[in-house]
Image 1 (tube, rainbow, N blue to C red):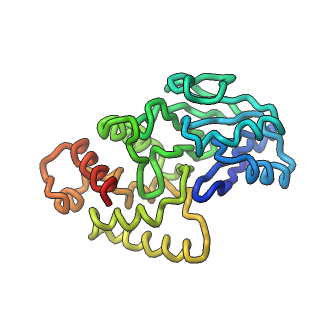
Image 2: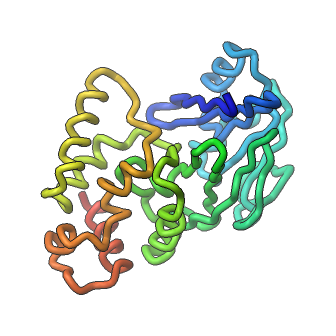
Length: 255
């Protein structure tokens, strides 16, 4: 295998990830909500992380870092724009930079909106992207700091990735996101089918994250403000995509 990708449930509804280069064996940990489950996943595989990639400064993405670094003194990578709020960084990056993990290269993208300085890591050779609380399964992160226009700009950047990109987002929010999505896109057959699958998966305690970008394109309302059906439901047939996106986000905040 050229790479291995491991999803690790943390806290009550967070996810961390391990990405391993299959050629060199180098491992990155992406976000550290808590150390225990990540350490267990590493130890069970005999893996030693060489890097930690942080997407943003919120506590539920960084709080486990000190304990992880005590066990494995890895290089910590995070956004230069968020460095004043992140744990100490060994490598501060910005949009357009790349991070090398063995034979894999991660492209850094600024996806501000949920927070200012939130970044995503897109790894084309592994067909995956670590989007945390920007693009999420059937949703996007609440706009604590950014504007709807900023988040829509971030969504458009991520829409440029190939359909077969695995979207590794930060939370198990998909069931509630599906309920909301159906209120703004009720006629979407793909969404109706996905919502049913999500209900069944969660009833069995199965994760719904990560997801495929092709699935998000077809069902995630935050990627679909141009859709005529959504526009008709919102009563915004001639509005800009940015304004439709803003209305969807406003409705989700009040859902």
